[in-house]
Length: 105
Image 1 (cartoon, rainbow, N blue to C red):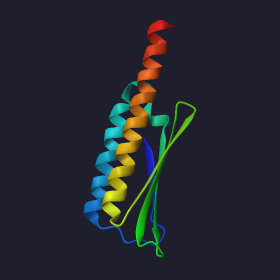
Image 2: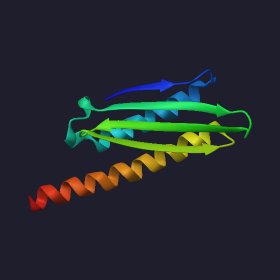
Image 3: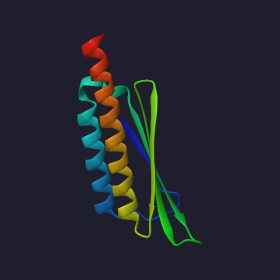
């Protein structure tokens, strides 16, 4: 699965980059039966100065579908973790729907 991190001028330390790569691997694992090589994931980080918050928006393009998760937090790592958690839930829901339609198809 291809992925990119758009940092928008935010310094991202090696620990967070590793954590993001690990979470991307988890998504690829969930997509293993569904041709993960055709999927693309974009992680977009932003800092909102006025609210002293960080945002993380994740967009997964797979199955001719777009799944998006976006969360905010005063801490960048928390925003990233919350965004991936939301995407995992959305992806698992979508996989269950596909599996159900295949079983009854």
